[in-house]
Image 1 (cartoon, rainbow, N blue to C red):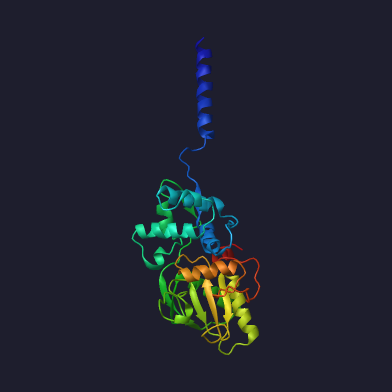
Image 2 (image 1 turned 180 degrees about the vertical axis):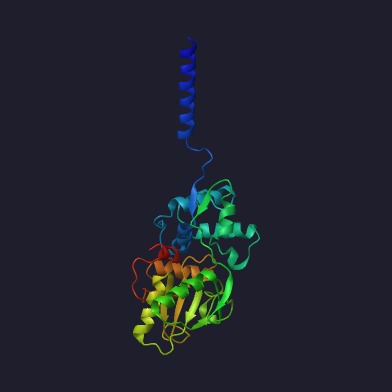
Length: 275
């Protein structure tokens, strides 16, 4: 009798132990992929429709639900499309944290994204701009410099920088694209047409939206304009140019067809590193 009772107790304890191991954690939170959110925040506001950037829906929905819960986004816009309403809502949230200027542009940064997700989600694939520094005599951030160094390695030459990043009000013709991070203007002095195009192509390969600019397009001389895709310090103008690049446009105010070298697929710096 004792042995039978003891056996039953052992079996019951084992069953409970197995059920505890097999049960999923009730405290597990959804994961927001910052790379996917940044990509959507650049592309979606430039779309003519409310299409969703592939691979971003679940992450964007989690962010929008958090903005909705805090009263920054109307429930009707919680749809996985990081459009202008979500950009405005995220900007308002950033301002509530005390951010100003490009830090409150509506483009998610790692700190604000994590804070918004407190007790709601965790953040993976974090993208950081890094510290500001000087390279080739111009200001840029660590991420942009690292990208530029890799492009120079692929080209086998060093590039001349005529305008760097964080240059608010520096060049009027730039229309604010250099106010934040990730923006560069590159000299093409002494380069043939083929070399210019190859430089733009290699910049695209490592994660820049890059175009050869000509005097016929605006009040400037020949140069290469490059924006580091998914730089979380981008100005609104740079953010729009990145989105237009993904959508096959030229990054100019006329939003014409992309006139740069074809690169497929278009990759961010982080995606390039995982090749």
